[in-house]
Length: 364
Length: 105
Image (cartoon, rainbow over all chains, first blue to last red; front, side):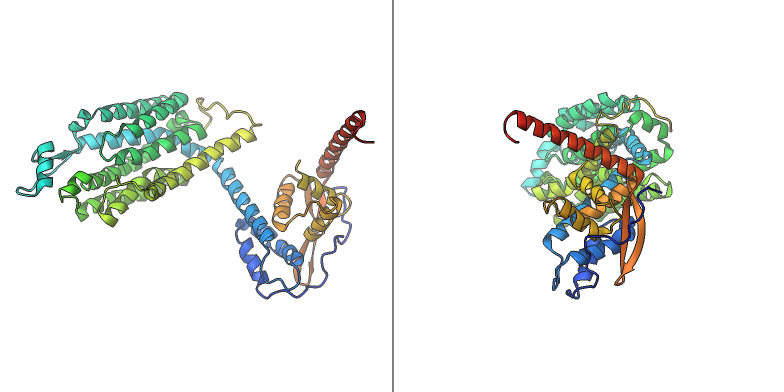
């Protein structure tokens, strides 16, 4: 109990009787207050409503602009703080630590699947100039993926970069892994070994999230302590789904579309969707950390969008419009941005200094 | 400490007050310069309660509407006193330097 005891009714003169106001005003204020998080609303909604109504002039039917902006601003700030406070919980930091370990392995797996599961298809005889053009370039049985990928100089370097990042992550070398991610992503984006370059765009989101996870989490060494076969299973299913979607996209590449062979069958979509659904189902059934599932979903989301783009207009993801790039990158950017905000919050919480050294493992 | 926080604590220094009372008092303390709005006020009250600088004194229902009265806690009074002392010292220093420079009497 404080020494400041109650002093009875307040000064300040809240109107003792309710002046006449528009009938919908209270309802509109309630709708505004609905933007606050539920715990805050249940605690303060009634008294806030009383203050807002008392502050409103007689005859007012709608909330004023300044009051509305103030409520929305404080509600948004409160929600953001709650998200950050929740994101800073050990469970979420650990989820990012696991992601920082498995994301490079995911990219390596996807690339190796690309090599291990080439797609070869026969060109129909007697077709137009498009088919003849492809035949001249690739022979009568063009192949997508497989060992021929290594003849593309960018692929070997990119795969090498992925392997190095994965190795550094497994070794728990957070800072070196971060540097390697920056180099590999830069090279990957600009190498364009693949026409029209959908893989660069798609996997860039994984690099982006990996960088954020390396910065915002205790690091892959902590991830190594936490990772289990369950993560491996979900990862394998997700990589298989991504590879299936990549095959569907490859079959819709501009070259094949030019030849009139661009329509992947429904089976291509069905396999990719089924594998993706299996990955999600496995993540749920195996009770993976929900935050980790969100980050993983953000990482593979561009591949899912790729499928939807192909389905919509039969065109490849390679035809990047600003709108499509925004659709592809927005969720991964938001998730990566949230992870970075965790870092800033932690640094601020630690007195404005640098985040704690995270190459060292912490107690589980 | 932000000015709004300082003014809210100041408004509660003498007696317990409800939300609308705090808004009116802050306007008066700041000579009309600071107009708190409900969103800002209750965000601050929520934070100050979490920091245990203020607490709920009592509640009453007027015209079917809830009025919750807040008051300063012991730690809240200490924080306010420390801040006021600091501000007073800074203000005194500013006035002193202005006097030395001949800019104020």
